[in-house]
Image 1 (cartoon, one colour):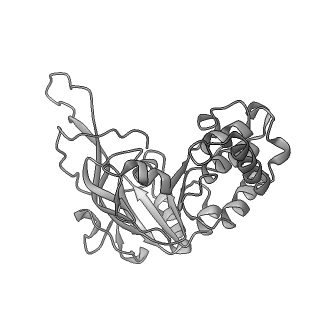
Image 2 (cartoon, one colour):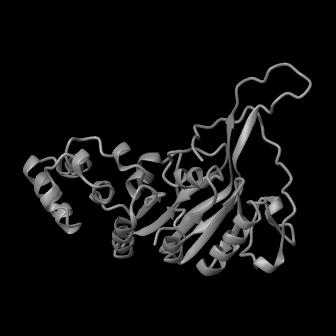
Image 3 (cartoon, one colour):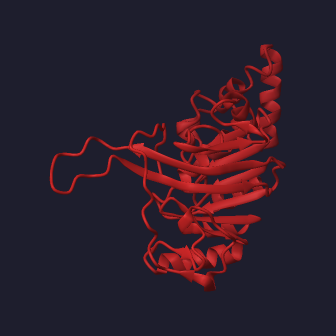
Length: 286
């Protein structure tokens, strides 16, 4: 498995200049606050409310988002300085496959992914057909992507990313737009992949398939541990109106986290972290 390391990572975005007044707005908003993680398990799920920071966390992993502070490394490669090499190792699948499928048909999209690996058109076409057949999509290869079902589109997007054989597959809420049957198809497909898989999801059954689950809340890791314990923690968090949490020993309030025992969680709010208003970032999303 790949070794992905996040060292004291903060992501912040600049806000519009505040109007003059007695209560001026802050100059920036923190999306992720001092995240320290080592990701080595084969299957890792990330859960959290909309806007909690989980999509930003995933986009850090292949350089789609740059840290404002700290560093992200994949097998020692820096996601900013070594961006091209990182993106060759870490494939990314977006929530909506139509934002990723840029060609009229699935075959053309997979061939586009393979253009650097296979210069010969005949070799590229044969390789694309092999990838599509592997995912049971051969019969749909020349059909318009707009005529495919949601599940078929998601598999096409997966096939296009996996065609270049990345070491890591990152998926941002891949089941959100799928019905029950296609969600189950996606689960089976992901379970059979040799790649390390890191995904964000609102589907707690999908999260339970993982080896490790991270719960993200207000830009921090509120819980990091075994799937069943993490899901129980997240359910309790949701039931309490997603109240920010910190561990009893204060680790998360300092920007670090332990594998927390839910019984030791103090639901006191986190102290806001100071942010350098001049911090640079290209971040967006939740």
